[in-house]
Amino acid sequence: MYLLIPLYQEDEILGKAYDARIMRRLLTYVRPYLRLSIVALVFLILLSLVDLVGPALIGYGIDHYIAPTTQTLNDIQRGTGLLEVSSVYLFVLVIGLILRYLHVLFLSIIGQRIMFDMRSQMFDHLQRLSLSYFDHNPVGRLMTRLTNDVDALNEMFTSGAISILGDVLTILGITILLLVINWQLALVTFVVIPPLFWIASYFRVALRDNFRAIRVRLARINAYIAENIGGMYIVQLFNREQRNFEQFDELNRDYLHQTIRSLLYFISFSSITNFLSAVAIALIIWYGGGRVLVGALTIGALVAYLQYVDRFFLPVRDLAEKYNILQSAMASSERIFKVLDESATIQDHSEPEEFGNVHGEIEFKDVWFAYNPSDWVLKGISFKIRAGERVAFVGATGAGKTSLISLISRFYDIQKGEILVDGIDVRNVRQKDLRKHVGAVLQDPFIFSGTIASNIRLHEEHISDEQIRKAAEYVNAAHFIEQLPDKYNQEVRERGAGLSVGQKQLLAFARAIAFNPEILLILDEATSSVDTETEVLIEDALNKLMLYRTSIIIAHRLSTIRNVDRIIVMHKGRIVEQGTHEQLLGQQGVYRRLYEFQYAQ
Image (tube, rainbow, N blue to C red; front, side):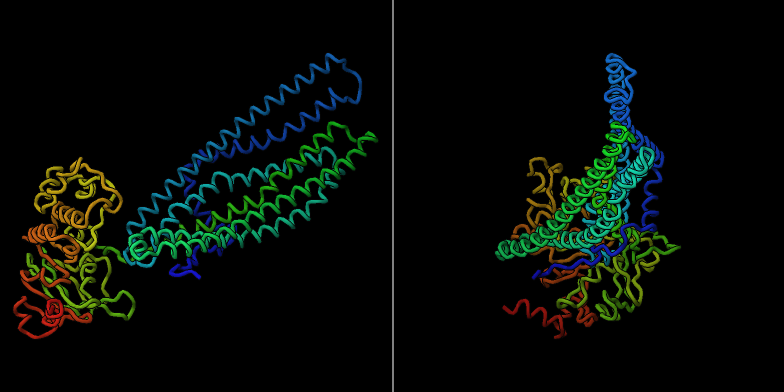
């Protein structure tokens, strides 16, 4: 039994092994490299032709110089002739080596460039999608799209589709040569073709179903690993290591069993193909040998024929693997295009309004909002915050307070009502124009890999080093930064590993100051889980942050909001009270009960 492991149905391959619609779309990524593709195709055709020359040269050498049908040449002439044939054969091998090298090189370059373009497009597209998309799509799944699925396409371009074309050319060329050499012997050889293709068809279906199962199980493993690494703190804190390992072991063994089954299919198909190839060769030796004995076929022709038959079965042996590559590529393409076709639910207005000098006045007019239809989080919310005013929102968990932050930044759109900034509906303004005037200090500040300085400026070049230092000093972050070995150039690991909770929060404050927004959104949990000394620094930094800015505090601890200009109390998605701290205490309402609950002890 797998606990908390979602079954990603879209990872199952429900489409065809070859989908013309998807292939046409894939070819749009090849179009910028059309010249390289044509060159690679020319090399492939030349390589297929060159590979057909070797057996013919061997047959010619045997018939004319090793076992000639007439004794018109002396030993010296025969030796010279063999040397000439061997030299030509060596030359053909060198040409084939060069063509194969260039063909693989060009295909690899094309594949890598297509991967680069596709990953760039996907990453750019993901950044533009609305937050609601990420609410329903785990990080592990999206990482698989950017890595495994794109790699599958690279394999198709480098060793799948083009190689199949080469195999087809080789089979056609060999078939023609077999008929030219001796059509009766060719008919004997082709006796094994019908059962061979029937077996190939059977294994094609079996491998397809097996491949679907493998992809589903791989998706489960990726999701489980991502979830456990992200929650390692909880795993270790609650001593879940052994239990989580047991669950992972079940997933891993299931994946192992499916992979072994895939190997069994490949081995079985390869073994049967080799057996049929041996049967074909036995028939050739039996029938062809008899033709040689009666003088109807030369020994050289028979040797060349045997080599051609062996080369005929090589692409057939690869059929299952090539089909697997194509199957994987089609499935990966479908999943990639599903991401690329996802449109952002939050769209900019076709004729956006422009902000003038932003003052920071905010007004909610009868706002109704739900993450899921009819499950209202906010119900008829109306309030107005003057520019520069400090307002705190309080209420029990689930009252709808935190949703206000996402709505002001327009990460989600409301279903009813209006949200105005300086009298302009946020839906009529470009998202990037709105958000550059809004700053946020969240409960769990996100710290990127990089330096202290890059985490403050977020690679915004117009923020100078001097501005970074001043911002850090202003919010009391310089105190710990200056003690680091490399100060502002100190490397920070993923998610701020190595920094304390308080230090990460101070960095987030410095970031907000550096960007200097007119509107500031604060979760007061940012001041929790730290020691007393750091809490004093953080509260001082918060007071500085709120100076001359419209500030909205989503308050959980009432001790942090006594000095705000106004407190708005929410209950079950509605505003039930508002006023100053003293006024609300005197009303004997929801705020008074919240206050007494927190400080009754």
